[in-house]
Amino acid sequence: MRFLDLIAKKRDGGVHTEEELRQVAQAASDGAVPDYQLSAWLMAVCCRGMTPQETAVLTREMARSGEPLDLSSLKAPKVDKHSTGGVGDGVSIALAPAAAACGAVVPMMSGRGLGHTGGTLDKLEAIPGFRVRLGAAEIKSELSRLGVALFGQTERLAPADRKLYALRDATATVQSRPLIVGSILSKKLAEDLDALVLDVKAGSGAIFKDVESAEDLAKALVSTAKRAGLSCAAVLTSMDQPLGRCVGNALEIKQALEVLHGDFRASDYAECLLALGGWMLKLCGLASSESEGARKIEAALKDGRAARRFQDLVRAQGGDVSVVEDPGRLAKAALSRAFKAPKDGFVCRLDARVVGEAAVRLGAGRATMEDKLDYGAGFTLEKKVGERVRRGETIATAYAADEARLSDGLSHLASGVDISPRRPRAVPVVLKVLK
Image (cartoon, rainbow, N blue to C red):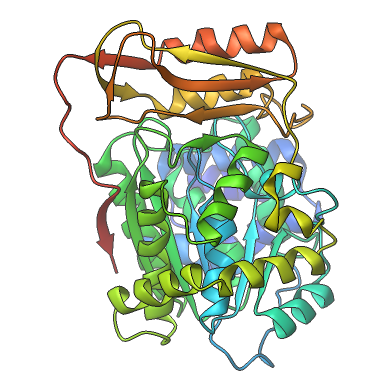
């Protein structure tokens, strides 16, 4: 069938056959179809949707579009975690080595930040020398030796997703649920996993602001994963305020290192990490329940095994291992300034999206993929929602390279912070688990 006919079929509400969806994935991976036709098909899907069966088939064909990882020689259970994105969400950096220290093999493929959300690869590159671009042979070797690797999507791993994702970003089709499902799961299926845990965010800083829409996405992801034979659970977590107390690349590496050394002062970050880690170990058979899995993850963080595994990982990927013991060696911004409370009360709003956007203005994120990052830029959050604050007390400290960025970031931050005379109702970090 001509690709033009596929566009028309979906435009008119038709249901694609397996062969037609295989043709779409092939066209996206080999460049045989011009971008404008692929874009037209994406818009048709965005407007007309896809059936669960179509979504599952598209996901499978995207996963098969290149050269999937072959990890069949590794006997330990293989498990990964994926977050739908948020602000301050550097959980993967501490979670991956902790799960590996508990006996899992963790091929954790991550992405870069764009807009108000941060990216794990950008955070890792705040460690001097750290390489995130690994070939399939190096990934497999590192997994065999250490049980963990943190890397970006390779050129030949689900290339159909690489093309379609780039076009979605440029054609206002990012929020199409079947396309989100296909993009996330095709990469994970290509990793040759036994199990997958999804961290689906809900709130102002997430893809979907309301819990109902986030839950619908979680259900679609879990259902599609199971259709593909992948054991899966989705943990629905709150993203109305940033996770943890740091936003920015080097700052979030520092926080992850604190957690890796058993410091759980960033309590919401630790709670999210233990919930996800518990399900990772449960699904891959290394714990009888998610609570037992969480206890095992916590033990690996407390007794130093996770930190040692992360140090080995940093060394293997060319990074400066000295930062693991001395985070003070990480990049620092030239300037800092406090954002102070204008009155007494309780922090009742610390809008995650606004904080993320303000961090971009400081230089910690990208407005476009071409923007250069300032690894030392960002915020430390001295106060979170529900905490008491006195007039003149510091709520957050901003870090940037120059006065203009500092002023711009702080000015934007102010629009996302509210103080109330009454303590707001506490919102749990973990909202729901779907499996």
